[in-house]
Picture 1 (cartoon, one colour):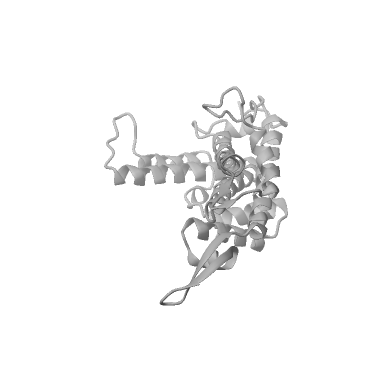
Picture 2 (picture 1 turned 30 degrees about the horizontal axis):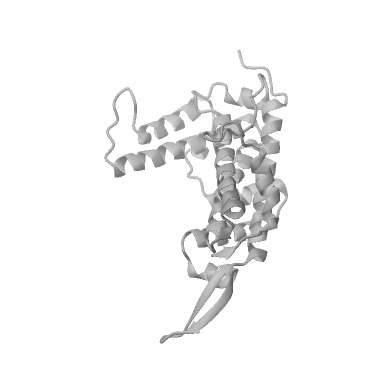
Length: 266
């Protein structure tokens, strides 16, 4: 561990901390505000059979903020940082923030609904796999995740949405690229940041070699053993990209939740 300063993270921390309800530290309420009637999000949510666009977006932003707060506590309160953890926590913020940007920036109401249902369908598919792993017994009228996933695709068809889009699994390397293009960032650079953070999360050696600082070295019987610590110059790049994603997700949410939508279908 090394002593942490990491002032370049403070703009990101400021965004996340501004959303924390100081009066409810136990539950960490996020101050996204209510969704106005007849706003874009309100109208997008109609007819979605409970699988709301807004729920996908709010959960994604909440997950991003949660990871940022965890990193903030590590840096500002513990005052000590590890090598891999700060990368992994930023990845945990970047991915859901990118998802929120991607969903909210669908070119039409149908596309936004398709993207939200795609997230819901994968959510149910993954839940089904978890149920299989632990031999979970579903008590009717509840249904298994795999069943729900199929129903979501059927519901998309009933809404005249593209079922093949809804049934396609999410790929987070693609998501961060799409979000980068929406924001106007270099997609290859952003994808490289995502690969680096994923490498640290998975314990890959190449990230430690390419993206860490060597503090010391000692000879061993088979070669040389290095002591590695966080390379702040490299981590800063991921932090700046994550800040851009989260800020854009919040701006887009505010516009969709409070801006004009369309009159509801009778």
